[in-house]
Image (cartoon, rainbow, N blue to C red):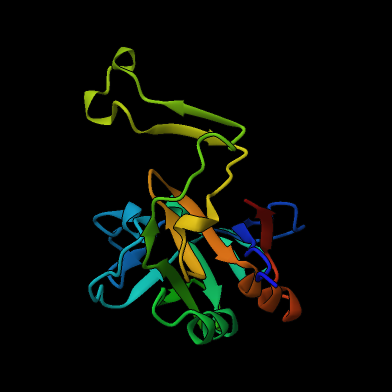
Length: 192
């Protein structure tokens, strides 16, 4: 009997949570924005950034999973703990102090970047072309709709970013199940 195929899900913030908070751009303790706010979703381990802070752009209900500015995933300590237990080599958690929030939170970094988007099965893919006037991006993904991944390219990874479209944070089914069992607020899953 062959094993069941693995299922994968894009993890995003549930924007329909009423009264939810909106978090800003990560800063250092002096309030200076980090030099490269895109670094949090490149799919690689980061050096020690020192103590980080997050402003609350719109005060509201704290969520166990949310996206700060530049799509930086922010998780409550209990979510960070589950991810570190289930995928220790694939996640890095950076402590972050959130304005007015006494609970412990972390910026979540997926440390793997995997070339696995299934171009044929994906609903629509737009590529950068010479006509777009961005020669450094020609041949790269410009937009991806209805993404599907080729599970045969993923290996044993449970948490990762997709090469070419790293804004997508992907989790394997057992990660989704663990977060749903714990009732993690703010997390939304879409099968890919």
